[in-house]
Length: 299
Image 1 (cartoon, rainbow, N blue to C red):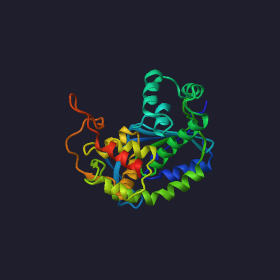
Image 2 (cartoon, rainbow, N blue to C red; image 1 turned 90 degrees about the vertical axis):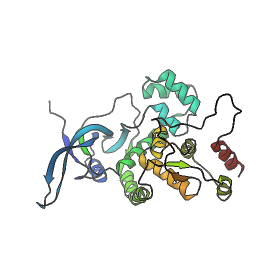
Image 3 (spheres, one colour; image 1 turned 180 degrees about the vertical axis):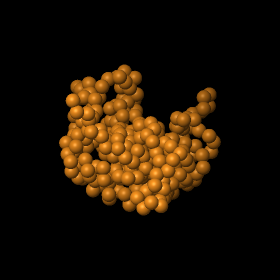
Image 4 (cartoon, rainbow, N blue to C red; image 1 turned 30 degrees about the vertical axis):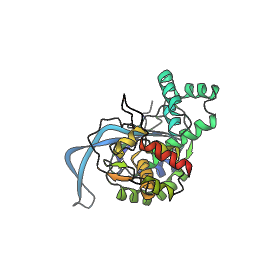
């Protein structure tokens, strides 16, 4: 039996868009794994005989992208939760309480089994699931366009577990969109190079909101709910299950509208961002976020 064919390299040699173009043209079926690059201490001499760069070996897996006959069908990041309930929650198809209950009762259920349960219980429709999985997959693949040096291995014939929900996506459109986003993403990185800053609301938020017709998306509302002057942008991204570029886009929009400000974190934070809370044995006071939400809804 012939061994599966592999393509190995680094994203320094072959950019993500070039890899996708090759997979699309060759109608390949298999999985692309991208790893953390671990320096070996040696250097590689480039083709001109003068330029050198650090040699990298594969570390822990950071991303996995699968294809069938040249179409993108599945993607996951090691740093992101990809349980179907979490994907639906992120897309706004499940509320916080539904998400919590489903994870507590069906955390080990396969995606396909959970999808049938949710459809039969009228939580979501089949269209909701397909659109949410597709959106989740595309967000990951667009984020990979910003990776520039990681080692990768493409193994032909390797596919996700049959229990995973896969949605075929034409790579031609993906590649075009990745090229379009490239200039925008460079601007976002320049505008927000440091994700270890925190966010706060301006001192006179009512005036800011009065000047802007605010229509926030589900993801923007979720980000706003974690803003307290202490949670860093990076921590908020992790809590909201977002990519670095995804959080940059939302924060940049909020900053441009004057709805938030960048600040240094007030104090060292635990791994899990804290939502505004009420102190026990005192009269409850509405957090700033509730006041802002009320203000937005009154506009």
